[in-house]
Length: 113
Image (cartoon, rainbow, N blue to C red):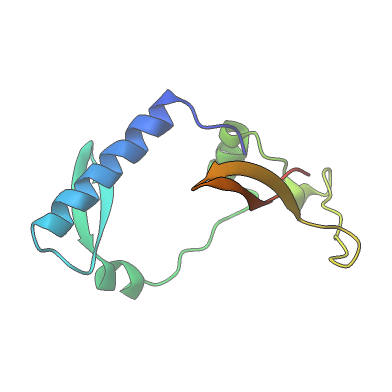
């Protein structure tokens, strides 16, 4: 994945604001989405009740998503992901942070490939 940019930050901020407004208005069981340049509340039951859609990994839209997000195409066999043995690799890195009165250790997953 690529780092978030300013547009991503604004979009997430708008989604979170709409979710808070919906909660404070008393709505429950909703999700916030952007439809036709308008933020809307969608009932979760309606969203989860729809049949699953399948993605054509050889299709134009999938290729566009890979190009936009700078992800490797693992389906083509060009880029291969190697399995990781959990016994030999520690997926957590330790960082220290000032929390409260002293230093506390934060355990953060290492997401680098």
